Length: 228
Ligand SMILES: Cc1ncc(COP(=O)(O)O)c(C=O)c1O
Figure 1 (tube, protein in one colour):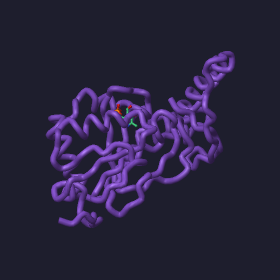
Figure 2 (tube, rainbow, N blue to C red):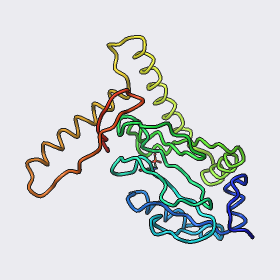
Figure 3 (cartoon, rainbow, N blue to C red):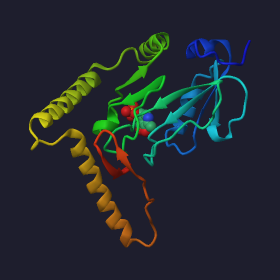
Figure 4 (tube, rainbow, N blue to C red):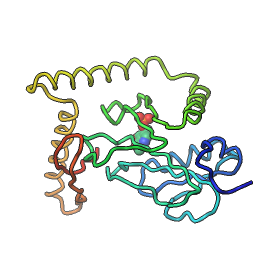
């Protein structure tokens, strides 16, 4: 049994052949959730190995990269640089109202959720963009088995939200007075951040981190990261 990960084989096949180690970075609020998920089933196929910064084992592994990171909104890169690894990108916060979109996301497995786009937490509706068809089919099957199908109410809610965003963006392109959804969301977050800055400025106990400013390819301008 080889410990080398052949990129032509898909993730789930590799998991079946060899124990896969699952890791992520420590600056991540969702890390505990990944840990719980990885440990819950007590799978013999994979094992939670913790912080990617401390990972120095041989053998295949999966690194979960949350970029932009939760809670600081910063763009992150994989930590472990090894041909044995497969990367899963959690792009839940990859929206221009949180952080400047500095590059096009083009990874093998990318996960998204609608909740961070519109602020509808709890909808539990997301999507994945997966390059390998077989991996995508296995992910679909996994979702089917573990969720018994996605709730119809959530699907209707998500469809309504996506419809509103599309109409809004279309109206924006034909009528410059109308407000683009992403501009609206960005302004809302900026207002909240300005308020928070004002409050914290008066405090002697708390302070706020400085967030980087960058050029956003989507909005075509420079601005600071604004975590939610
Ligand atoms: C980084 C990250 N990924 C995924 C999720 C899950 O998203 P949802 O609540 O829309 O299922 C969260 C939720 O907080 C998150 O912070």
